[in-house]
Amino acid sequence: MTYHFIDTHCHVHFQAYKEDMDAIVARSLESGVGMITVGTQSSTSKNGLALAEKYDGVWCTIGLHPNHLHAQSFVDEDEAPNVNPPPAMGELEGALIKTRAERFDPDYYRELAKHPKVVAIGEFGLDYYRLPPNVDLDHMKADQAEAVRAQLAFATEVNKPVVIHCRDAHADQIVLLNEEIANGGLARRGVIHCFTGTVEEAAAYNEIGFLVSITGIVTFAKNLQEVVRQIPLSQMMIETDSPYLTPAPNRGKRNEPANVADVAAKIAELHGITVDEVARVTTANAVKLFDLR
Ligand SMILES: [Zn+2]
Ligand SMILES: [Zn+2]
Image (tube, helix red, strand yellow):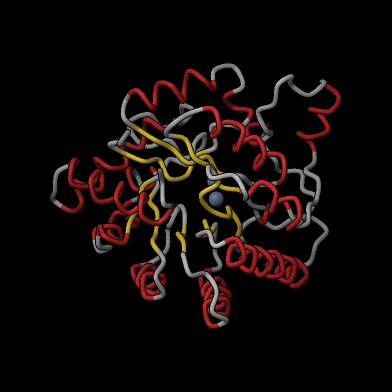
């Protein structure tokens, strides 16, 4: 089966879909949108794989997001894993107030990575935007770099591409990627997801063989529109990051993979080409990078 679009980054296995996950997935697949569910910690990595196993046209990634390295209280309930049966109320309240700190455990992820539906390692990376309380900046940066190095090495070991989450940290992020590449690693390279950097940063990633992926932010942020206009389609993929970042015209509502069509429509407008052309090229880029089958 071929898909018109691939939503290369979504979290349809999160708590935000606990009432209607299967209906959302079915609606997307029926509208010709395949999807990659992205893990952010041990639980969501495992649950994403369970969902991917269930459907043709759904694949998954596994990894540890930088926001889960330290106990934090910002966490929104959308991100709790969609588990059945749902956690007891007491447990859930605990999860809402505070995230557990996790460390990347290669043994745990190695077991999951054996499954053919696991198409990449991530999302992981550097995030200097969200500072956990009671952790100093240098300490946080060191912990993040350590988790990035561990997951880059792991991706090299299992020979899968990486999905990088990077916020306010592109200069340091590219140094870490180059370090692993210089060691002969990352043969399959990867993608910088939810790219919101500059034209120069996109070019620097493309230079080392990385793609960038564009979210619904492009439908409403003028500065990103200017950047996306200048990024070649051959170096681009599209995503929703559902349940977050809903594109216009549905801003304010919960996002879902089918809305990746709105991202594609805006890119088509910016590049002066048809939506079908955006679909053809970005889907081919995703199939190639993630070896989707
Ligand atoms: Zn992210
Ligand atoms: Zn994400």
